[in-house]
Image (cartoon, rainbow, N blue to C red):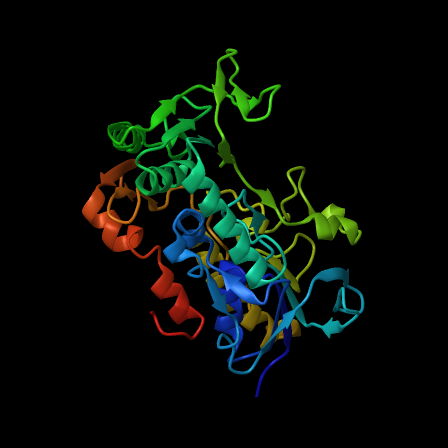
Length: 368
């Protein structure tokens, strides 16, 4: 016997994890505008290497045994009648609603278009542009910018590659100066030009770029790895702007419920839980929300069970690959310090496979 209708809007890491956790106990409908799961962790390599073109795309069809996946776009939420309306006109009733629409990332870590074919075509175009470029500029020295620069360098050892970062050290937002030094040493030893304290903007001519000091750089291809934007414009358009912070994140309470609502949750990159927005945090939020949703559906009135509260993660392991066989892993240790581990650990944990076999298994497919 399944208890209650749960509608999960967004089939990214948090949405998939939550839907799978609830599939045995509730009637789950997972809504996503894509027909497949997009394994974003593999996307940077897929935008550079042709042999990875199809790796980020995993079908949803084996994810749920009891529930279903509805391909479509949510356009309206009726909190009084408790249903979600899709762009197709279909109405999905809910006892609990979960917003898990994630964030929008710069290309190539973005699902471009509406079909798998269109998204693959976009990745292939990036591969071809990189293969033909004499000089590639990457703007942003956080984890994505460092990883993308390394992938481009390994794919194009003959091209000029420049990484421009606005901060004083690479990976400086992680708080680990040692990891930043390690990343810079690897990149520079492989011939990547690293510009620090460089706020880049497009120049006056096509393919020219200028930093804050007036230095001009010419590059025939550029990638901007400078942050993400929460996918919540649809909520604003649906008249629910009061649910959002000034940055566009969904305001949640300690149980990851939208503030003021017991039956609406928001998990993953889309919410304002104060922490680094990375996949392990999204998965942890999904697990806690799944527990609280089960408690909400299985109790009522005076017997309602208290939810568990989420403790924001401010220090979490972070892995930054430098291609498939090297990288840096930051591991928090007691006392506020961070252990920095090297290539062997990083390769085994993430760099070689980019967690693709793990995510395939999560969606019901074999690891290969």
